[in-house]
Image 1 (cartoon, rainbow, N blue to C red):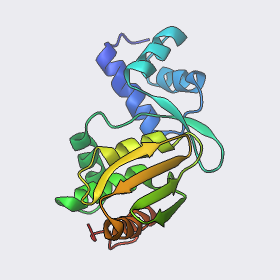
Image 2: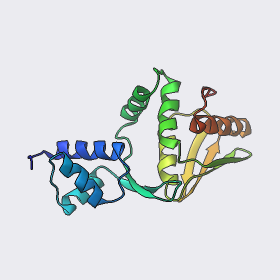
Image 3: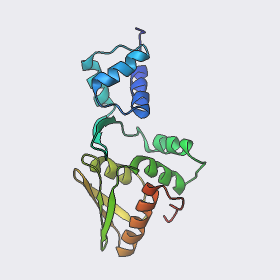
Image 4: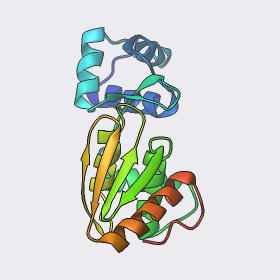
Length: 178
């Protein structure tokens, strides 16, 4: 066992959760042990709380820990680093595509409102990702367990945002209709 600082341990947890689909604290503890980091269940639980880790249900029904990005800028830089070089609005698209792909299952529109469906447990996280970005035409979101209500400024904005949202989560190239 190697001595570690809390900061180093938190970083190791972040890396483990970003590289593996971790379903339990026991599995996470085993991954950390492979790196020479021994941790008690109580400490691991506190660390997960400190990282604001939550369990999300994926489309296949499985649950796994998920850590939201610590800052919008860091998350956008990480998303951009994984793909082609992007600038400005495209960084926001890259960030949202990374976060929302697999979390949004459908988008429906009624006038200036969008109803977005997600797997159970994912709506609040997805809505939070949308709320943290300056998106023209979107006034705000309200989220439940598996549904997000997006309030657009007007009918036209709702229509363009619905198309844009489906484009970025489907991985199509032209997500620049911002």
